[in-house]
Structures are given as C-alpha cells and as structure tokens.
Length: 255
Image 1 (cartoon, one colour):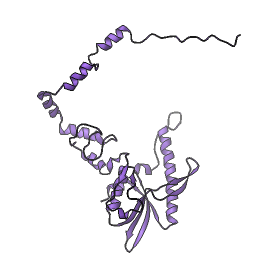
Image 2 (tube, one colour):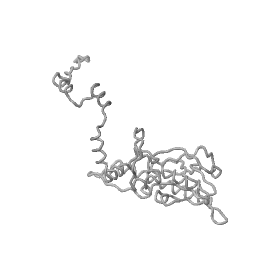
Image 3 (cartoon, helix red, strand yellow):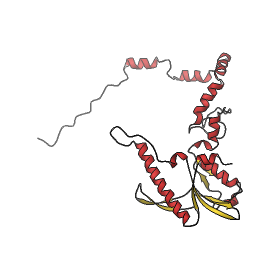
Image 4 (cartoon, helix red, strand yellow):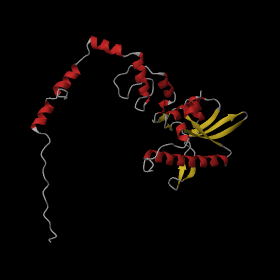
C-alpha cells in the first residue's frame, strides 16, 4: 500500500438560502429594512397611546418594576436608570431598593474615596480605593466618626499559608483603625465581608456524587478566607491589636 493517499476535495454544500427562504425573509413584515428603521425613528406616540401608557403605570406596576431594579446593572445615585439610558427622569424607588442603596446597592463596583478629613488617614489620602458598596459606606463612617483617631485601607501586609493552593501568600486586610477608648486607644485590623461569606457554603451534589463547580469554588474561597483570618488574628495578637470581621449587616446599623 502506498504511503501517499489521494486528498479528497471537500464537498461543497449548497447554500441554505434557497430562493424560497430568501423570499420569505424579505417578506417578513418585522424585518428592519432601512425604510422601516426610518419610519420607526419618525414615529411619535399619539395622545391616546400616551394616555393608555400613563393609565397602565399604576403604583402596583411601579412597585413591581422597582423590586426588579435591585440587580447589578443599575447605577447608584438616585436616578435608578440603567447606565447610558437617555431617560433622566427620577425613578420611584421602593423601600427595598432604598435599603439596598444605603450601602451602595451591594453592587460589585469600585472607585476612589475622597475623605473630608484627610489628616486622619495614615497613608496617601489621594489613593484610597473602595471595591464594594459596603466598603464605601464603612470608609465614610471612619472618615466622619470623631471616635476614630486614624485609619488606613489595605496598607498592612499579613503573610499566610493558603491550604487551597498549598502556597504562602500575602493578605491585605481591608482596614487598620485606631479607635479612642477613654484615655487610651485600641488598634484594630478590620475585614469587611458580606455576611453570606462568613458561614460555610451550602449546596447539593450531582446524582453521581460530583460537587458542582459553584459549590466547589465557594468551598475553596471559604477555606482560603479562614486561613487569612487565622493569620490576621495571630498577627494582631503579636502586636496587642485586635482582628475583627465587619459584615454588611453591621454596616447597615452604623450612623
């Protein structure tokens, strides 16, 4: 048998755009042709249509939509509209939405914090970064509370052994805070975490006993966090400090 084989040419399949299918596509009344796009741009609601939409916008409908606006795609600041929306009118928030916006909406966003009392910050006050809404709320509390002598954010390095990866790593606690205690002071290492991440994760297994990926990831994160907290506790004890975990529920009660 020869080592050379004949290379077969690929079979060219017929185009799925048969004349019948193309004709049906062109005849679709909902296809966005240039003429239809121009017609939609020039279209305006009649007074009857506007009155009908206004009548449908009942308090119950506003509350139902407001409950759905607690997701991560909506901006913070009172407008309640998606980012980039051309509608700039104030949105009627429900009580549930307002309570969540009090701590930044629990949304995963970050930015730079500008303190009103930069002299209290131990570090560069122009480079304070918050990584969540609850961190932003806690920074405002530290900056404005007269009982706080000084504070810093992610300025302390704690080495720890990560059992999830079997490697030594560096842990940066969220805050180092000096608090007034009568005539003396108390130094605290503080980590800000959602309450849901401070308890062992719960989940179900697949029918064949395999762990689902999300549960496995949560378990590894929990193991790593516990190693961080143990190292930070010992680090604080060696310096006569105190390590403390502050949750979103604690921050909600701050004034």
